[in-house]
Image (cartoon, rainbow, N blue to C red; front, top):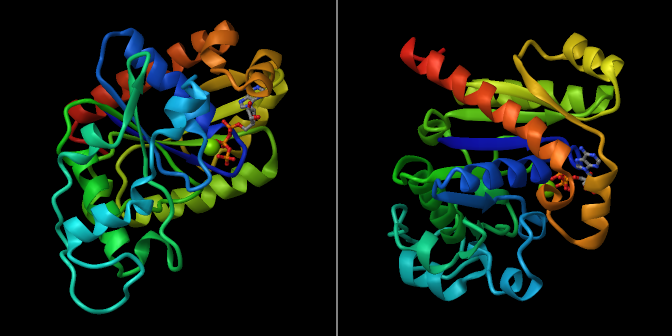
Length: 266
Ligand SMILES: Nc1ncnc2c1ncn2[C@@H]1O[C@H](COP(=O)(O)OP(=O)(O)OP(=O)(O)O)[C@@H](O)[C@H]1O
Ligand SMILES: [Mg+2]
């Protein structure tokens, strides 16, 4: 299962990523969580102790590795570098594992984003392709708003693309924009997940304003989740109710992906 999670800033992408990663790890599955948000903090959300979190260097900052694999220095624009560098050993070598979840940080490509023609973005692109196509583990990609890191070649390898929204027009507007970008590159299965819902009317608001996408489920507004963030701990340790809601979301997701796969996708 390869799951990409996106949505407007602050809606709960990282929280949902951590909950799903934790649930898969509990099932005994191998889980690779990818922090693809340049300002990401998935490590804390997964309960990584700070020393362990700090031991993970984002791939985009590994200048020697980028040079070794692509044949060019990071930041170099123009000139020659390998577009298909070796990446298959990177997940093992540059990640850290905690409570059954292996975490890899992609980091930021300075100047031009991951679309730029520079060695570090070539390495990241090859790595994301490998993560989505060449791995047998569950892969959970915690992304920024948008489809950054996915391209036409890799989009179809994503089993589920979850757009997180909260009750409010802004995150739903962002969801619409993301949906259009995702459709453009042919991401096959797009879903919404509502987060921070307080009551039935919040759920109805999201359903009513959904940009024509199936709503997989909802996570409630949770004081325990806020407390977890205050303490720098994992929401799955402090907010058991969220874990149960995430379990339902995951069950519906697997069911839906199973059905659409049997039917040849949509
Ligand atoms: N269900 C919830 N109830 C209460 N607070 C929540 C809930 N989900 C997330 N939060 C809080 O909202 C804030 C943003 O959550 P999170 O970091 O998961 O969002 P994000 O979309 O990854 O943000 P960013 O765009 O900054 O990466 C955090 O303080 C988190 O603890
Ligand atoms: Mg985040």
